[in-house]
Length: 224
Image 1 (spheres, rainbow, N blue to C red):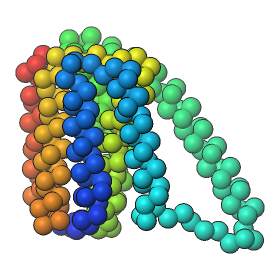
Image 2 (image 1 turned 90 degrees about the vertical axis):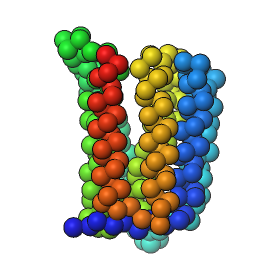
Image 3 (image 1 turned 45 degrees about the horizontal axis):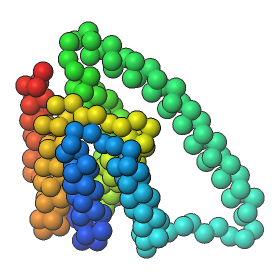
């Protein structure tokens, strides 16, 4: 069983600190209780710069194909594009029913929709990331695991949050303002701090994060 994962300092300095910065910026935007159109545009611009930075970094290496394999390359490209288009279509189709179902569950159980979104929807959409992280952990690929977590959080904050705010300003509920945003900032700081400690992630660190998440879940129900 893997109990220790080594983390490169480069990941922490280039991605970890950037995640912390983005989290603080998003938290600052939320101080007035909403994420406006202008703030959404800023989020999207910053995310674009982040994406460009990643694509230009040495860690991103394009796979080179031999000259005589252009046809194979084109076929693979067409297949990948088709898969992406089908995936987006399936996601849009399923999201329509997921949102409706989540809203109905909130009414049936008599709880705010924010809680359903925070627990069921957030956990459900995080399952692919969990599978990737578990696979990376088994193969002792600590950088892939951390990169997956950091990248997905930045995308959720500035891509998803930015696009959503551009479509329609995001009005934060008291639950989001007083619990979700502060918890997000605090847990991000703790996560980044754990990585910085000896550049390792140990089983005990994972246990701390899991306990903190359970504490967060319990705290949610005190706001009902």
